[in-house]
Amino acid sequence: VFDARAEFAIISLSNPDRLVVDLPGTRLRSGLALSGAGGIVKSVRSGQPVAGTTRIVFDLAGATVAPPPRREDGPDGA
Image 1: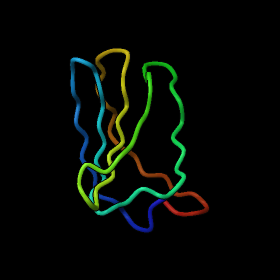
Image 2: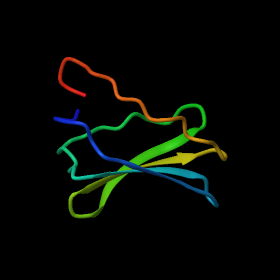
Image 3: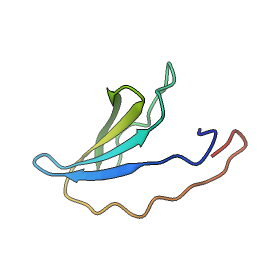
C-alpha cells in the first residue's frame, strides 16, 4: 500500500529469467509476506539494494514481457 503515487523502474533480466521492480523512496514493511509462485513465476523475493529503495524480484520459468503497470485503489490506499 502506498500513501501516494510511487515512482518505479522495471528491469528484465535473462540467464536466469527475472523481472525486477525497483521502488525508489520506499521501504519494506516489517513482516511483509509476498505471494508465492504460480504460473510463470517460480518465486518472489524482496530486499533493499540501496537505502530508500525497495526491490521486488520475480524469478521466472521463462522469458516474458512485462505488461504496462497499473495502479489500483483499495480501502487502505493505492
